[in-house]
Amino acid sequence: MKTIKTNEAGKRCVTTLILLVMGLLAWAPPAGAWWNEQWQYRKKIAFNTKPTGADLAENLTEVPLLIRLHTGNFNFGNAKENGEDLRFVQGDDQTLLKHHIEKYDSLEEMALVWVRLPKLAGNSDQEFIYLYYGNAEAMGGQDPVGTYGPMQAAVFHFGPPEGYQDVTANKNQFIAAPVGAMIPANIGDGASFSGAGDSFSIQASPSLDFSKGFAIACWVRIAAPQQGLLFSRTSPQGRLDIGIDQTKVYCRVVKADGKTYLTEESAELTLQNWNQLVVTGAGGGVISVYLDGVKTYYMQLPGGLPALSGDLIVGAGPDQTDGFVGELDEVQLYSQALTDGWVRAMYANQGPDGRLMNFDVEMMPEKSGFLQNMHLSTILKNITLDGWVIIGFLGVMGFLGWIVILSKSFTIYLANKDNKAFIRAFAGHEDILALNTDQGDFDNAPIFRIYRTGCRTLHQWLGKATSENEKLSPKKIEGVRSALERSLMDETNSLNAWLMILTMCISGGPFLGLLGTVWGVMTTFAALAESGEANLAAIAPGVASALSTTVFGLIVAIPALFGYNYLASRVKQATIDLSVFVDDFGLKIDLTYGGGHAA
Figure 1 (cartoon, rainbow, N blue to C red):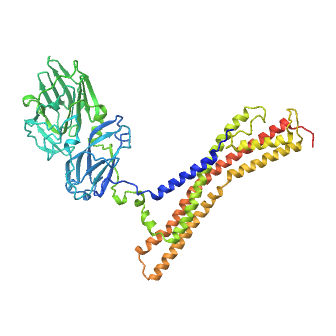
Figure 2: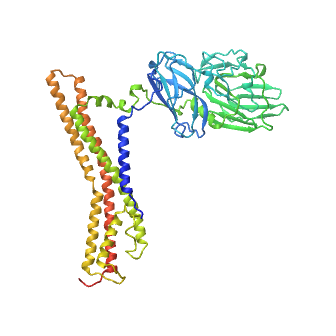
Figure 3: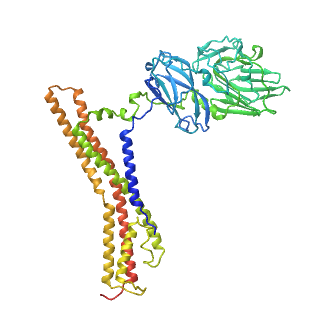
């Protein structure tokens, strides 16, 4: 015969769980791991790619991100003058990330740092890294080459110390020295072009092979409409030009057969403002033009991309024709086409909106954990013996209260579940005595236990030889009803059992806490009177210790209050269901077996 012991097993499981949780809370170390204790400070930098942030749907990997530090998000006084102690650590607080500093000015309190992020998840606000600083002994730590992945063919910051040098591992060389001046730009310093020989050329190299795809990204600013070329590359197989017609950007591809393909001039630059321009070309021949992260036009080249193997000229065309007048900043060359998500992420990161990153507050090791932030370690250390005695009583009350809340919730859940199952089974039989009362399928159902009591009582009155036509006298029917009522009372008492523990926690917890507070304050002032010296430093720990008992009392009472109200409502509903069944079952017994002569 099947017998379900879920109720008792559930209570044991709940009790074991509470003991484990309380043990962990008692012995757990302070929260907030620290990557390296030699660094005194850290900041959490979170990334938001949801629509409320950068609005990126695509997952990206190995992304070089620009971290802008300023007085609003960084305390330069806690870091070294040159930023050599800056370290970026992944969210696991173990993995060190590659980075390099483009600019660090502790006097102006502004810094530009590039960090290689292994993963940037789309439509998420759960990704974050840590910025560590505050180590006077730290040296170096930068890795410009490691900041960029293999798809970055060349990167030019146009600022010291690199100047016009490629900071990637490719170290692409110049064949014509630049003559443009460096000026303040969107990201640090930029290069100024006057249209009169201010261009520079980058020598062709294997890293600049555009045959399988390419991307050219930069920030550009113009002061007036013009006819000029930003980038030009020529080879026997064709030519690529990226230029400006008045204020509109275009991309022109000339193939070896002389056919020219020109994008629509739909990307218009805003005068006197910095705009991000990205032109990508896929190996299949799709040329796309992006302005400020938005694709403005694309075209398909018949036969795919031409093999562009010549030198790349920046700021003019061949023979210094069509010179560009304006400023360029952060020129980045890629050996493959970029996706829409990558371009959008670049603009969201480097642009003026700044919606990709959020900087948390500055933290220190000793304040990184929850207990330290709440000063609980200081309070616990100063609690007196009488305070600990009261807290001990409160702890026992709270423990019993949680036992009642969890075990009672589990018991009522099982009771409701089995009650519904029994009601369905009971409704499926016309004979009210058809259900087997010896089976254990509904042992957790109070309604079933009432039904079983009623059946046994009814069998006693009917006798062993029961016929369908046998009737009971009104007194015997009343006896069956009395048995049902007694069973109802037993089940109701069982449902309400132990709830008194919660009422004791609700009413007694705050009063015990208040007793500890009054006693502690009284003891503190008595000690001050005996010593003859009073100051805040002497009073504060004792008062904090005294008030802590009230806090513990409220910690015990508040969950008990909510738990009691919840359980009381569930018990009330269960009691109503039981009463309804008793009335219904009694009526069916009367209709089926009533009508006999009075005994």
